[in-house]
Amino acid sequence: MTATASKRDASASSIRSAATSYYLLVAATTILAVIGLAMVLSSSSILSIKQTDGNPYALFMIQAAAMTVGLVALIIGSRLSVKTWKRLAPVVLLGSLVLLVLVYLVGSASGGNKNWLPIGPVTIQPSEIGKLAIALYLGVVLSTFRNELTSLKRALVPGGIGAGAVLILVLAGHDMGTAMVMALMIAAAYWVAGLPARFFGLFAIVGGVGVMYLLQQGTSRMARINTFFSDTCDVQGDCQQTTHAEWALASGGLWGLGPGMSREKWGGLPVADSDFIFAVLGEEYGIVGTLLVLAAFAMIVVAVTRIVSRSRDPFVQIAGAAIGFWIVGQACLNIAVVIGLAPPTGVPLPILSSGGSSLIMSMTAIGVLMAFARNEPGAQQAFAARSSVIKRSLTVLSRGRRG
Image 1: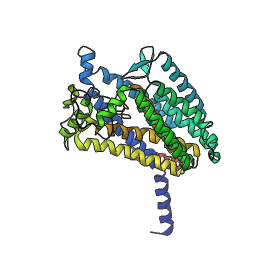
Image 2 (image 1 turned 180 degrees about the vertical axis):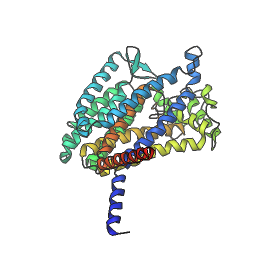
Image 3 (image 1 turned 90 degrees about the vertical axis):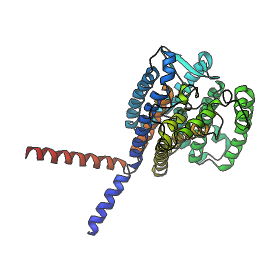
């Protein structure tokens, strides 16, 4: 092989690798979306029968509709430019703040959290929009003032004001699980932006005091904590969900009981289609199924790491890190609860759990990451090269048919 050919092959390989982040996101999202629909169909069927006088597909159809909307949002979002996402940041932030205020004023409560807003025939969860708002807003603000984050004032103004307003409104609805995810996002954004480490220690102390205060304000929260650290509890009461989740995972074994064959979804797990859907996955598809889902989230980790490390745009780096911590951090928190490493928090498993607002906004967030991946150095050349190869292949095939 000549030196020229070697250089050409190395260049082609470099161009192809530039699009790796994008394809990792496509593969991970496809895996999670397909498995998510299958698991919601299985885990929600019993509840659907009870709620709709015998229709086992009622909740699944709602999820399928949300998936359709989410896919449209993902495709559109992935095609928007980075500049467009920057311009949308204040619009998304303002919209989420207005909706969160409406939730506080006229919203409805579920599971002890006031985080739902009825709009006509549908009910939305504005806190999910707030997650995207935090990521985009901090991406714009912190990238602008990145070199000035040396004082507490600049760290809090203006970045902390907007993100803090969303966080406070979510906490006003007693949704501590979502607030924890948002706190992770904010920490990730500031870390990538280069905030000095001493400020993280200060914020950790303040956050710890705030968490202790909030735990004292809700009896259900303290009950969950006490149950988690207790040696004994009522299997049909306080620790019903966590105990039956462990039983589901244990009974699944390596290969699982088979599609639709979960026993715990018949009443052992009250929220089998949402917070504890990972347990039903393990019961029906075994360790193999759970590892496939974990591999998909690992792909997202690799893709986000590549985006943050390879991009030259601070906005992409900061917003991408925040979104990555949202999707993967929330997944880790949900799975930790299911396997008994954390007390119940009420956060769903992104893309898999039932819930239209969570699904649509998670898919939108993946679309933003795809837009960022399309703008990695060399990515556009990779897509152009792929398009050229496809066109040449089609030309060869058409000529062969004519011949």
